[in-house]
Structure formats: C-alpha cells, structure tokens
Image (cartoon, rainbow, N blue to C red; front, top):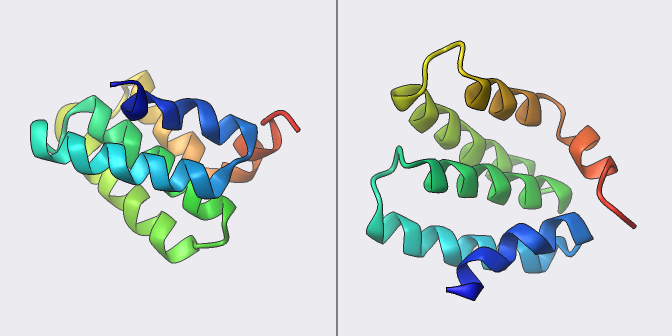
Length: 102
C-alpha cells in the first residue's frame, strides 16, 4: 500500500523520472480496481501527465491530461472546484512545477 501513495511525495521533490514510474505503477493498479472516472484514477492521470511534462514528454502528458479531463467531466459538475483545479494545473503546469522545493 505504501508504494501506491509514494508517487504523491516524489513529484514535489523534482524526482520526475521516479515519480513517473511510481505513478504509472499506481495507475495500473487503480485501473484494475476502480472505474475510470474514480477520483484516484483521475488524480493519478493528472500527476502522471505532470511528471511527463516535467520530463519534456508533452505528447504523453497531453494524452493523460485529456483522459483525466474526459473522465472528470463524466462525474463532476462544470462549476466544481475539483474540475477547476484540474483545468488550472493543465493550463499552467510550469507554475506548479516552479513551486516545488529545490
């Protein structure tokens, strides 16, 4: 269980390759256990996209963010704060990455 949450701690430390690997593993487990529109799946897709973006894998990041938005739109109201946060992160990932500790 600890391994499935470790990716949330690695990304802010700028350990992007490790965050990408751990998030990918966690996402694979979540996809087997939960529906695609589950908040943990959506959050993992968003985090994986952020780790990919940080590694200049913009195509992969966009694909994961598009999937996160698609699934979030299935379950969240257009005015929901969670959907607004997801849109804000995707619109300006550099700001989020810049706020990570050195």
